[in-house]
Length: 339
Ligand code: NAD
Ligand code: WQD
Image (cartoon, rainbow, N blue to C red; front, side):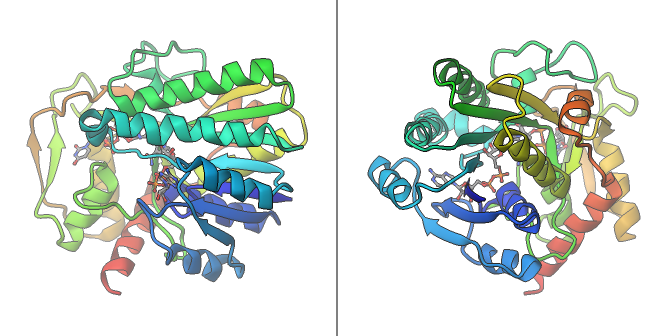
């Protein structure tokens, strides 16, 4: 079966291409390289022995997208990762985020409706839950007003899919709400490549340890949690990738009970910032230079997933631990800096 992976050279996309190829799918990638590089193709090939088809294309370009689908009418399913994801940047450039994350989904759905097979897996985010009232967070938890244009693009994306599925019974969509993907492929051929100063905890830790950053700032130790730092559900990116393969298979086999389904993708376990630092120190056998600073605006205190729905319906659950993810993130950081 032939699967289009948009944003397939990015962090989660590249790991998902590997997982798809390992399961025998033929993959074609669209990416505009705005947050990735062509060299990721060799990384994928090194792992799977197969170089996926790749077209450098911007999903905002309707004409080129139309031309692409004219040439690829035999696509069976789409995994749609392509989007911009920097929360802070989205507050400064809201129109760019709405165009790059929302218009692109619309462009894609307009092309998809012309195909015989209309299956799409959409990258959503736990950010839609905001500061949830109860932990762990189930898919029934209310959607909270978005704290950023980025978060809003994920809420709007889900609404667009829900509304479109309602009028197009041929379309089957699954939104996966990822919690905090971290780590890298254990081979160190692919991993996360943040541009500039990382916004996320784990790349900030590994870049500090390798000497690219002087010190990690821990954003607040006065939260109402056991050690005072925020709690998140950190999940190995390889586990996240596998969730796409099972979700896609469900969609392709028309096993969905509703045209539009939503699943949490997390480990079900919350870890504090200090627990992540401890894990890093244990697996790397070194102390991390960090200091406590003010809280970061917009951070929720705690967010971790109830994964029962994914377990029961998709038959998927995470397999790798926080230590596994930190070990792979650290190996990857060492590999890319010694190139
Ligand atoms: P990423 O930036 O590594 O990958 C996104 C890829 O899409 C990049 O390769 C980029 O070049 C490409 N792209 C962006 N705009 C494009 C466009 N207009 N046309 C074609 N290609 C385009 O990000 P990621 O971490 O792999 O995230 C993938 C998806 O998962 C995104 O939709 C993101 O919002 C979502 N998500 C990520 C996280 C996370 O923590 N990484 C958490 C929840 C949800
Ligand atoms: C994790 C924890 C920080 C950096 C973001 C997006 C969200 C989703 C996932 C896409 C928090 C603390 C961080 C640092 C720190 N992405 N931290 N020092 O905030 O859960 O979510 O990524 O959908 O939308 O907002 O992840 O990695 O930024 O932070 O102390 O330098 O680490 O305060 O408690 P977050 P994160």
